[in-house]
Image (cartoon, rainbow, N blue to C red; front, side, top):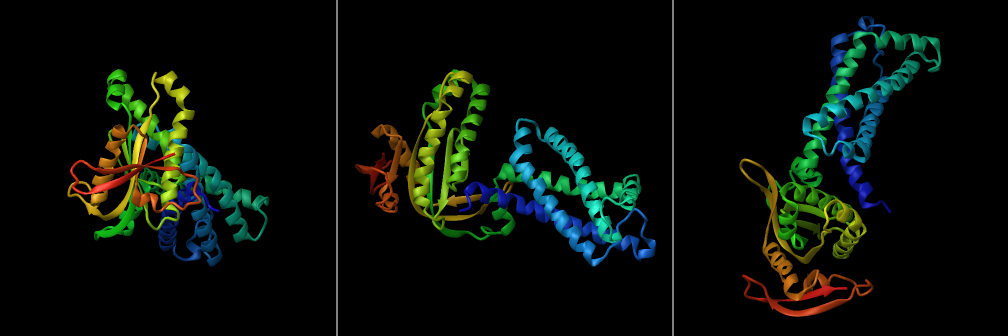
Length: 361
């Protein structure tokens, strides 16, 4: 079974592969249009043939995937604390050196196809040396540099908007408002005001960054979508079409708790306090669409959002860390090992109708 983490990685690197393939085709066609007939082809360039086009297309999309994997599994984390400009320059220089090595390999393979000989042939090495010191090499690096810059801008936009939001914008999924059923989790840090006053605003900001990072693995693993961060509150949602979405939301809550417990020593050493949170789970219909004049965003509207927020506020009243609506409880199979305890029917603030609430063991 493919894990949620792998699915996310795949969805992140596919657009990068597409970026590299399309830019590669544009530059290949441009170069062919400029060079024209074979007799005008420089000695350092690879002659364009159907075989070469197929090989070049496969090579460039694999290079794009390779860059995507490195970016999202290694490099992006290393540059996370740097400014946008430093990130861009640092990553770009790293990839340029990496691309030089990739060019060495792919050029020699392509040359061996053209000359119908092995890559260890002296003729291949001579051709590569001519290529390395030629205008063709400069042109190739410009092409790769352009693809790299597009990739790095895509990564930054994806990271700031959220990958799922960016995909929805490109696909135009919510260009027209749609009605859908979603399960929401409202998660709120306990004693956040007191912690902020104790740490000071700068240290508290670093504290929040660590807190959000430590919760992200559980959210990702259990296929949750972060709708928004509001101060120390995280709003997470699951689409009804996601298999086992109700169970996933509960597992996500308990794993988020577990991750914070495992990091307790770190928080105490660095900040002198360990974060904890309370949450609520509720399901209902929302209208989803793009909204905003100066800044576009995917926006949810529906009574379920207000109700879930009110439920989360009741955690303090009942002295529990999790409150779940009956609508969510009814979605959990009896085979699941959860103990639901009814808290009775409550009238939530701003609501006229009662709602039966549960907590979970």
